[in-house]
Image (cartoon, rainbow over all chains, first blue to last red; front, side, top):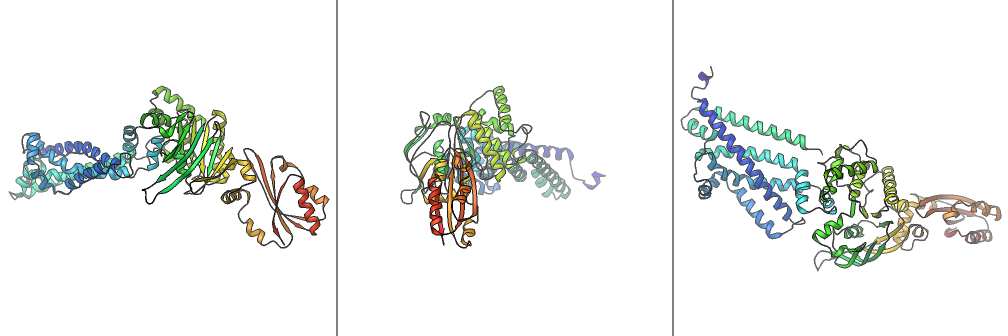
Length: 222
Length: 337
């Protein structure tokens, strides 16, 4: 029955591509979380009126974030090919997509982290200082826990954007569902392959959104 | 206990400098509840933040006990702050933590072991009357309960000084009184020095031993609360005192009163309990009409004010006023027809 409807779909290949997409999305989300968080916290703390207010650090970090956030992803992948070769040793396959994905998404996430941190009541930070808290204590026990719902919903959005990026990375040889849809589907005029790949990507996106929403709901005690 | 000497604090650049605290010198005794009153912008928020080093003075020195806070930085300052805690107008609790975890926070900062933390938190929850709410989140509490958490949190590291930054300004009158009672009992039981800032004379009247009045960065008047109530000197102090001694609308009521001489009597301490009026009426041929009366209780004793309309011939009225002076009742003629 399914074979008749979707004559060109090779389910083994489809499954393999799905795993590759999940692998790329998962790993790049993890790295994006770490790097984006560090950048976002740095951006927040060095901004005017904050604990480490420093024009130079704020300016440099801000410029870095803005530049890498603005470069279209498909161009970014090509621009950083030398860097990718240096880091991974190859520019093909799912691993090779990770540096580009992280460099593309981390600055985007850093902005969201900063927005989340800015929403913390200044009074709470002041209260922690009045108790004699060190800056590291303020970061780990006040800033991050108090902005956790914003950090998680930002990560959800970023992670979904990363699913899209992996599809783009697929077109230039990173594998995954994007690669399959483009080469096996579009270039060979196999519409059924494109449709199935698209549906699987949609399901991945929905599941990520669902998990994100659920996590925010559990964490948000406001 | 707390000593400020020639303290100045200015904000902004050289050209458009704002002098928030202007040459303030004062001493606060150990175990005292010291109030600082002023309208917003008077510099009282800055002043209280100088006491725990959240702000550093531009010039002048601040000593707490024998530690010169204004010279401390880094680790020294952070350790000193554990003994000078603070509560806030908007409570500033961590919403991501339960009541228990919020109170434990300063103990975590001080590096207290877990078992000891739990013992201390349980004791504090009991002290501020929050038993049964240990595991609630701040969002599930009322304003008064939130401030109780704030107070418990502030007491966690056994501070020597408690700073209250408009601690009751976001609460309704009844809750305000309950929180003020709690502060008084903490002051008495733990011998804690309390410094509070407020714009409500009611707060000063109810719990403070001494008060400083601030205007435009300067302390314009300072003294025991009862003395300040009895004879406010600066115009701004008079305004603050009238906040609690004259119910709203007094002035309008007086304006519509026909005839007679209006006098305002001020009774302090035991005088409030003696029947001065009864003997006044018996001795002089005058009609006495009570326009408005009020008794306020301060930490230093009771303070009463009474506005009377006297109708009769001039001699008798003059005699009556002289009699009141004789009796040690402060009398002021506020209107003559």
